[in-house]
Length: 551
Image 1 (cartoon, rainbow, N blue to C red):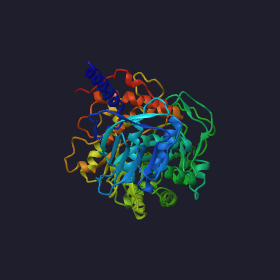
Image 2 (tube, rainbow, N blue to C red; image 1 turned 180 degrees about the vertical axis):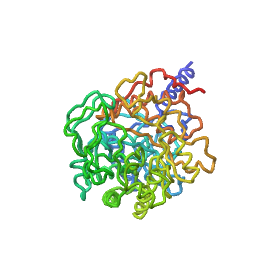
Image 3 (tube, helix red, strand yellow; image 1 turned 30 degrees about the vertical axis):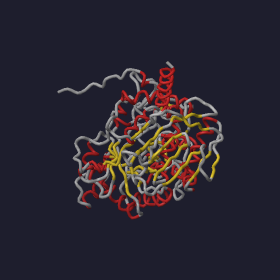
Image 4 (cartoon, rainbow, N blue to C red; image 1 turned 90 degrees about the horizontal axis):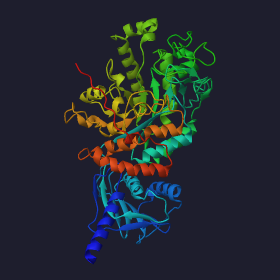
């Protein structure tokens, strides 16, 4: 009888321990010991660093621990029975980001060949902590061996349509770090606002960084708030944010849009337009705030015909801008947009038509290719490479470009077949500005993207042959902010979908299923509560089937 009771207790403890191992993204290998037990982290637990360069991981853990549980851990030189040991092993697996995490009665040990891998081990350790606050944090004995599936695991943030403060951007970066994301795509210029200081062109921010009002309701709008709004980041603030991300092993990729989405820049410097003397065109139905004369920063959302003119003045301007932008970002990549650039003004511009003839181009798509390739050549001369939206395929792909495929997967497939690197970001799977429920529970751009659909995505298209799949670097979710005006709404749109995407990009494809993921997501939701973030509960609702087209 006593054996039976003991066995029941052990089984119950084992089940409880297993239920606490709910890490997202799911590790490649998780082993629970035959005999269950736990290690307790208290204020007396100490860190032992075998390599001083691992201090950023300790700092991140301690900041989290203090914010959530109210205490920090000190460091010691020698491991004891109550220590967390961080170590680098040059003999370990050299896959970038791989790590091992072992929790035993004697303590915790995280080992990787890289600082980045140790940091990812710390993120898994944080998810082993209980989701209720306590001065004694029991963690089950467990052995984890883990590595990422994709090298590029990204999240995008549009600060052009709505501005977010430095502290808000840093909070967003922390969310990426907690999900083992390693790229932050920072969309800095738009029709509705230019957000990065360029010292040679101060009007880009003094004029282009602000608008006189913003539409209310869905574009073209039901009214206008008549409220001036805007903001920008100084170069010192940019450096601070880039360094903040780097301490979390996240690479920041800036986006400077060209040749389209240029209304804010043109408002500041009208000579960049094909028709500088023409006032900004206001679409029918748009309620406008302030002056309608001359070039204006857009107050509504959509695609606008006033794009950069492909003149020597424009190219000199963009090169000057890049000369100030590139040194701020250590990333080898810079995103130059290339999407949604209407050809209307180019078609009616005598200069553009003459340039097409002089360069022997086929049409306006060829002119955009000329524009992109010319800028790529300059960027390459600075030791950087470009990323562009899949429209840069039109008219011929720039020689060294990486394609970000957003209009479905077709552009990515085509680019990979041309032996170009690809980042998959199709709107139907990873546009986090889409609605999460039907009917919409808040104002969104439209579309329907429940978390289940995000989780079901695979960034490797079946159309690619085995030798072509290597060109898919990974994937990214995009957060466009037409209707995201504040941090609570931002959090609502990314959670829990970011958790689902993190597993798509990190964990092995084999064995992944929503049925297995959902219980871990429920545990993750408890962490959201600990973080005091606003999140959508739409994942609890039935998924509304998306109608399929029939012939």
